[in-house]
Structures are given as C-alpha cells and as structure tokens.
Image (cartoon, rainbow, N blue to C red):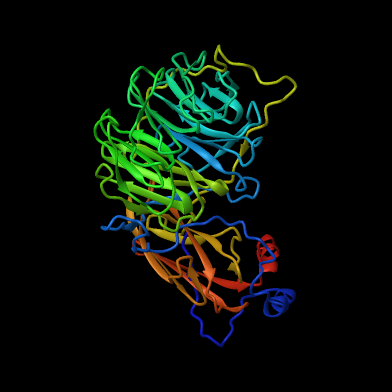
Length: 519
C-alpha cells in the first residue's frame, strides 16, 4: 500500500472534518498506552529494508530487497484468526492453502486468479490441516491431524476423505505425480502410496521423536527429517531408511532437493549437501527458525520462518538475501516456489504473501472426476458447507479522465474518508496503480506525525504490474510524540504519476465508528 500525508507544523494542530463528538473525544480522554479498539488491518510492506545483519548471520551479511511482493491476507476477523500451515501451486494463477488454529479447525482455500480472490471450501472432516500438495490443476491432497487426509480431483472444488492408513497426525507430504506420494507422521513413520491414496504402505517406527519433513528426488531415493538433528535417507521408495550424519542435534522442519545430488534441510540453520545427503554442512544461520523450504529452479532456493522471515538464494544456498522485509512480522509456516519467480508463503494470522513472477505452464492435468473410486464418503447428515468467497484483495483500478496515462492512488478500507491511524495502532493502505509498464519504482513519503512501521518517513521499491495494473501494501503508524487530532499526508509517485492522501491520528476507541461511517 501507499500512503501520503499533508504538511503540518508541530504545535499547530490541524483537524479534518469530524463530528462534534469525535472532536471532543479526539482531543481529550486519550489513553496513550492501552488500545481500547483492536485494529484488524493486516501487516504490509513498509519501507526500504534494514541492511544490518542478524545475530549469527554469515560474515558477508544479508541484503534486504523488495521484489514485487503482495499481501493477499483476507482483511477479515473471520479468517485472519486462523493459522495457514501449508501451500501448494501449479502455476501463477492456481494455488491452494490449508490450516486451522485448533485441532478441530479446518481451513481449505483456493485461488484461480493469481491470488486476487481466495475461496474457502468445506472440509469433509473438521480437523486441522497441515500440508497440501497439488500435482496439476485437478488432482491434489490435503493432510493433517489424527490421520486426516482429503483428496480432490477437480481442482479443490470438491474434497472427499480418504484412508491415510494411520491415525497419527500427518505433518508433511510429497508427491512425484498424481498417484505416487509419501507422508510422514508425528509417530515417526513414513507412509507411501502408488495408487493415488487407494492404499498405503508404512515403514517401521524410525525414531522416538516425530518426523516433520519429507522429499523424494525420484521413485526410489528420498529423505525425511525431524527432531534431534534427524536426517533419514531411503533408497527403496520409503520402505527402509538409513540415518545420516547431520552434524547437529537441533530440530529440522523441512528438507528439499533440486536434483539427486543437491539438497537442503532447515530449522535453526540451513544445511546443504552436494553428495545425495552423504554429508551436510551449515551454510547459513538466520537467527530465526526456518519452517519451510522450496526450490524455484536449479540453484534458486527459498526459505521462510519466524517473524515474517523470507530468504532467497541464487547460488545453491551459499549466500542468502532477505526479501520483503517488513511485509509482515507474523510467523510463516510454508512456501511454494515456481520457475519464473512466482512464490506464495502462508502463516499465522491467515497470512498469504505472494511474489508475482513470470507466467508458468502447469503440468498436464488429469481429466477431472467428481469422486475418486477409493474415496471414503464424509459422515452422513453433514451437509457440505457452501463455498464462501473471501474479500477481493486487489481493488479494481480507479477510472480516470485520461485512461491512457499512468495513474496511482492510495486506498484503504475507509473509502473516501481520511486515513485514520489509532494513537496506539497501525493502519494498512494500498497503493493501487494502472497503465504502468511491467516494472517501475514506487516512492512513498509521509509528511506529518506518522511513519512506516520501520520508523522511516520515506522509501522506494520496485513493483510489478500485470496487464499494466497492480497494487502494493504499506503499513503506517503514528510517531511516538504524535497527539490525537494531528494530520499527516501520504504522497505516492510511480513512473511520473503522483497522488497524495491526507490522514488523521485518531483516538483509538473511535476508529471502529469512524471507519464504519466513513467520516
């Protein structure tokens, strides 16, 4: 999002139009410490990244960059209370996300338009989901608590429950094609199927602690990871496993390979092997736990984790750069990366973050069927919930009198009203633009008693457009010394187009009323 603020002078309070009650309450009875009204605005990218290195980082440090990321998190308390734990995508338009906050809280989401809209689907069983995998636009699987597994053969429009061969929680899965896949369990076993989940084989118990990640490079060779530095390798399709020397006793959350030789595991650090997992060396210590990895293409690896951490390596993990620093401070649980740079990451608070890359052709889809032959029907007398569309995330470009020239505007949930920021809160705003080239440099500045969440009053970043249009998210907060009733101006500039929007530091308790009534 982009924000602009109006010029102001300290000591000379400027007020925008409010009702008499708002003026009265906005200048007295201010609680400077305890917010009374809780904002539900999502986090957003805020300013040029902090280029300092983190504790434990490699001596060379990490550079912070923005590269066309978009926050697609639903701005609704009905959805942002959920944790999204798994994400899958087959091209730049079709993606799926799963999760849930409690054991009996099931969330299934899908998008068919590149994240502009996310649709919530009904679950055949109300159990928390942890992992999702789609091989093509039609065939996909979702898995989670207490051996719960669903299958879809029509792109996630319908899901049916299938027998996963275990009652233990399924923590991760990986499929080579629509029929051949593996799951790992909290009870430290590996499940495998070659007939699309119609039946499952199972390994013996492999450790005393649960398994958390699995990846197969072909039908024979695969890896699984877990607590206590556990890295396991199988050479017989997952039937038997050998423990490898990881060089640490710390937990690993994920494992991924780009080819039979080159692979990475991640947890408290990121480790790399170039000899089919025979030996592992630490290549990066990010200072925060890494929850998930994925390979975009040979040599390009992505990692996400705690406190909104998004890392990218373009040289097989030897060096890493931080992406979208400040986009969110919520923990990220999973990531999927596609050739061409399209990336989705999901996490706590319903976070869905999207890096828009080049168009991707998905694998050839298996013709859809409504119900797979091996499906176990859901319980009787339990109607499938009606699909519920989530709020549209990218606003429709605003019409202008000169549609053939670039334009930019700041939009927020309050419509035409000034941008209200609570005295002790934050505010999310979108910089929406149209008639732009494929890439451009967006600049944003604030005049007045507000800053971006990094504490800076200006920043610039490269943004991407699709068919000339797009949006970018920002988050503003008041300065520490700001007083209720002071105004600010957010100014935006992109490819010669400019706009500005005024805002107001408001009393926290009035924000809900002001936004609802668009005062």
